[in-house]
Length: 469
Ligand code: HEM
Image 1 (cartoon, helix red, strand yellow):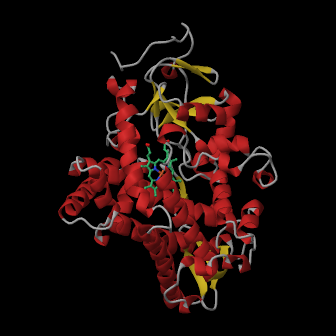
Image 2: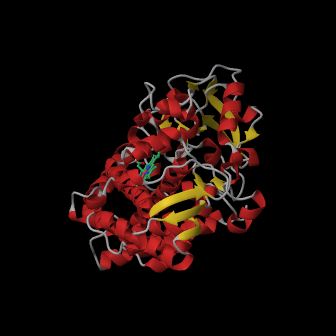
Image 3: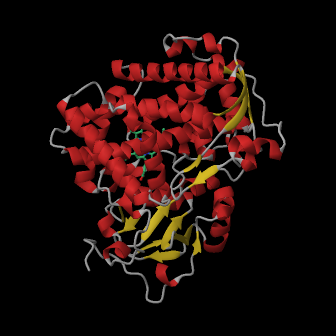
């Protein structure tokens, strides 16, 4: 079988193949609770590249920072097109393998070379007007994010009072990102929760992942058709304007991928950033208290990248990586979370003083498939506005459960919180905030927030009724 690859070198005879190695399953309760411990053990056992089982399929998990960068940057060896995947081509994947549905959706992320560059440019151009507060569309999105946080906090105050308990995922970040997605894509809000649920199912490879991907894709195709009929000031319409040749199905697939990043990954980034402040990570809190929100975000991403493991790459030829010979057609899973551990060997607090720039993180990826610049700016703007606004509205917030009992969602790609339960006290003016002025009018007030690290307030038994854990 030919995968369209150039045979430059071949693995030496007798070097172990992926299929011949004993692999330990990656997604275990231990990984759920403490993925870093698992990465460290794999690194000790195998070096910077380790064979692991992903829901019954062997893959190469890339753990070393240098090796991850190499895989992300070298597109002639590491391809994105699923046609390079040997096990798929030979029909060796288990029937109904739950992650396959997502990989079969052909869109920018799974294209190579010229086709990829063209599709990527469409994203960058169409996202350009929304990327920051300096354009009318970007300013409107930013204002909408700020207004939405105010509404959510006002609703919380009305329902639960100025002092109380809440889950910041359900009551703050998730509805916020749903609103942004609805507004940015120009789709009806009825699609909302069902769509988010379907994206989670698909990404985590849970039961029903396949039909969930189908439903989400169908919904996005309907949005594409709707906006072709009635163009408006939204991303869907701008994508059609940038590339009028896109069919409804093609555009639906591109929106589908954007929805994953915007809804799920951006939501995860908001929660992970809030969490690092709440657990009292000193280096993260220091940047927050000096009003450097971008830096707060960089530090949180370094410690806990939302896209913990990036989508598969497929070897186009036999290649040496770490201590192994990877064969043409093998799958590599580059892990940003594992790679970041190398940057943080001295401990996350030391990163503040160390030579390592927090911008060296791989939270946005690297190389030709890294998050497009306009998307990065938009994502950062949403996260910094949501996080900054949070610390304006809340005088106090403390984790309502010990950090080791937080309910994590550790899928093959995303590591994010299912819930972020807190005891809070709203700032006295918060419910009366009403409609904000320009966000910049209020910028920088979060330094007044009382930064207190996590201290247990409730007994283990007492919190389970809130978080189900
Ligand atoms: C703030 C949260 C975000 C994070 C952490 C993030 C992270 C990433 C990462 C890690 C990749 C690279 C994946 C790879 O190498 O395979 C990526 C790609 C991408 N992201 Fe983002 N992203 C975010 C927000 C967004 C938003 C808001 C959009 C658009 C609305 C977006 C659109 C894209 C696109 C189109 C790609 C594919 C690029 C390509 O394959 O050439 N992202 N993102």
